[in-house]
Length: 382
Image (cartoon, rainbow, N blue to C red; front, side, top):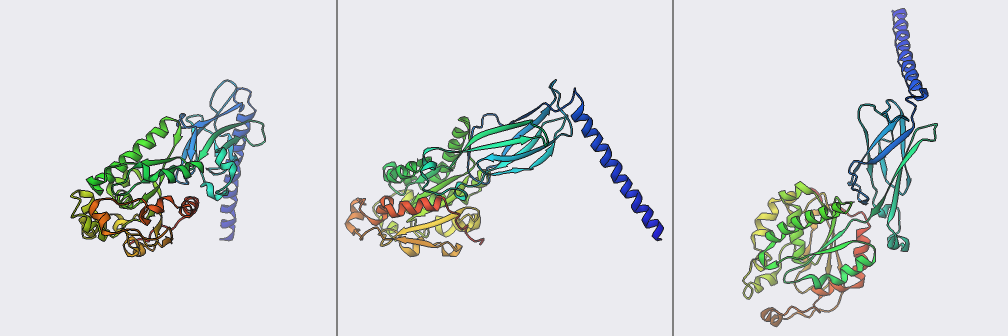
């Protein structure tokens, strides 16, 4: 019995030796033949339009590679190694063998910028990050490189009820000054949350396509939403339509009535539109639609933060709470309350309300920037 085992083991070792020897000889012939000696590596993006990539670790990018002889013939079984020689990110796989039948593909996966750089680095504000991927044939001087820019994920600002672009100009300017592409999604809030959410989906898709037409690959956006805009963002990101695109990385809420606002019930006596009715705690949005959507109304695959102004006149701390998803609410003192019933009756909701002041507070701005560069918690699964 022992002799049979030794014999079987010997045969196995012999087989392994023959296979290894055959492969080594083939590789040697390929690399020493004048006609088929590796002469050049070609490496480029699968989509040649791409020149810039958003720094999000789900933004996977495909590159294609071929090894050619001096006569331009693709060569088989040539080992090629890859590394990120400038910048950062990951390559998968890090080593491949070329093919003479078709091009070989590798994937680049960027890291987030915050993983490597300080958020207030002046260098980051003045010049985008640059990444270079190098492909080399071991023990030779044959190599190829691909270089591109890595930018911060763009930010979309979403305003609240009866607001417009001007309410968010200060936040936008602050973020742009810190090197982040920032846009404002403007919508007619009187048409209600569902219409606005559909418009947000279309806006993000168009913006993503506009970026791509300019050679910039964007997979996800960060959304900073104020008041009703936060409910709009929640509605979109928990709808079936969102599953097609999955294009939001972070949600940062500012004074959002996640359970509705009691002032909306009073306001419904003076404003007869869908928007004000949707914001009432008893509306179908809160009592039926959101609870039946993805994760009961708060997507558990999106990083989330929740902020409110202390003494907010229109949204209570209880109303803005996301505690059932285990998301904490940060409270910022932005001033004293200035709301009275006459403002509701007259329709003059002034800018000096705390509910609006949160859009112009330097401490809140600094915190928003920090949240953009920090790994945030995701809502718990419900």
